[in-house]
Length: 368
Image (cartoon, rainbow, N blue to C red; front, top):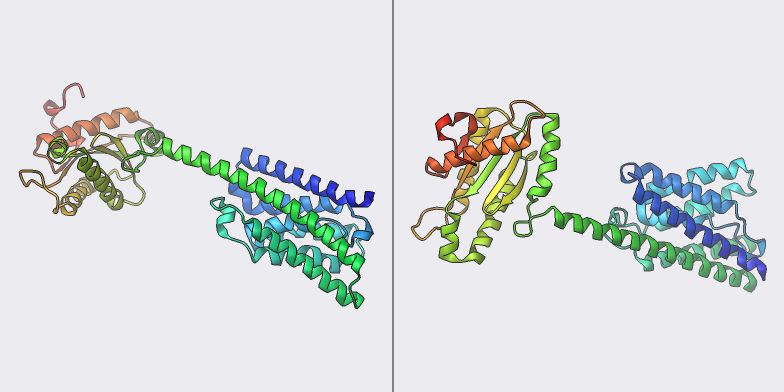
């Protein structure tokens, strides 16, 4: 009877190894090297299972297949096959009897079968791994072993079948526990990611908020010169007063979408507050920036020809632009200068863009 406790011990060991691997993954920068670390950790788990041989009566040598199940299901065939390299090497080094047969049955076949149920979302963590897929993998491997045994022996014995059913139950229960652990870890990761997104995203426009914009702009400014654009929706108070705050909110959402779709690919836009947006641009040439600002003004006007103020004036934006004179200057100063340029655009009749360097000194906004 004690021989039936051995696979339970191996199963507990494997669950513990999976828990350790998940904690290592969460504490380290695992994602960048997952293509290499996943096969490495899976291969090590297989070898540890190989060090815990099962009683011969159970018809299995060990539980080396189980780590490969998860590798194939979660990461696909390439990672699953890479995961078998270390245990295959260890099998030959340890002079395991019937090495090629065991490798095909307990490593390569499980890698192929489990990868048939792979979903790319399993790897990214955005989708819970299906327990049904896990049970199907265990069932197919179980049937494969019965077929192989029947082919080699000429017939199946009841004792062998019962022992295989017992091992199927152990393998299935262990694999389900591992899947549940991985899914719980992924749920925690998705919840944390959602909370981070909500903290860094403007709830109305779904653009990044100023809190997330500042460190990104600071980091970019430490590496190179940048430009900042302050973009303000003209006459927004009057629009709110005429059509109501719900319509005003809808207009802000639509303007943010238009701006997001028409800025340069490498640029970064966020909601500054109220009806203002702030844009980080890697462009520093004054002529190009001026054309860029004018193009955004035109795009907004053309996109909202169907919407008008009470006096039939179009929906427009005003833009102020400032460029850092050198890397690592004060970001707050650049934003202040862009705000000064925005004030000049407003003073010039709105629906235009102004470079800070083009503003006469006497026209600077007071106490901005």
